[in-house]
Image (cartoon, rainbow, N blue to C red; front, top):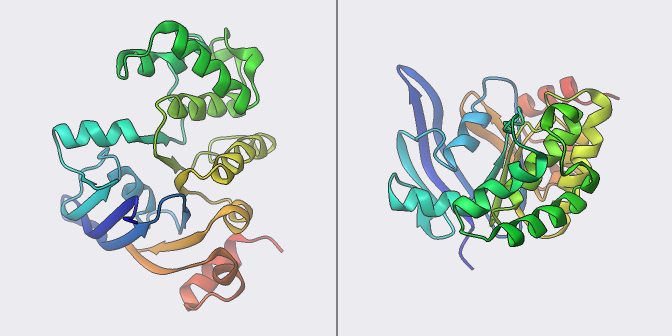
Length: 244
């Protein structure tokens, strides 16, 4: 079976700054890959190249057998790839229900009734069905992030990308978002997650990938990665971020 995501020799430059230095990464269908690493290591830049929010400078990225390029290919891939960001990016003037139904009706052509049923099913899945008619400002940060996840799922993507989805949340709100992501992983969704939540990575990831200075320094199954890291740089990083 062909991989869901295949990045080959991906480079990214911002002017003279060489941010990604030959990234090679394959993600199988249904696999949960968690990317970790220090700030500035290129992990968020890389995940943003997977739906062309950042155009890669060299190399190839293929998602579900479609090479990621500008034009028709880009539109096709973006219909299959959902993304959740650090900031929730909800439309403040729309209700929760309207935020979720906007793209399915405008992009996929769902009827209003079908889109609203889908939205309510997703709000139930993320645990906040009673908030459908509220505006984002009436919700906590954790609730807004769960709406953002529901909104991404409303496009029925084959891949979900998460770029540090809990980093802007108060500590007590982190677990409610991570629990939704765990359920999503258990359902078989292909996921690539950039996060600092090591407990989540250890529990949910099929594979952990460690970025440092724009390169993949080490990767492996979660249990092996955390219990027996091979690289000294990895050991130092884990020693700094894991609380004993």
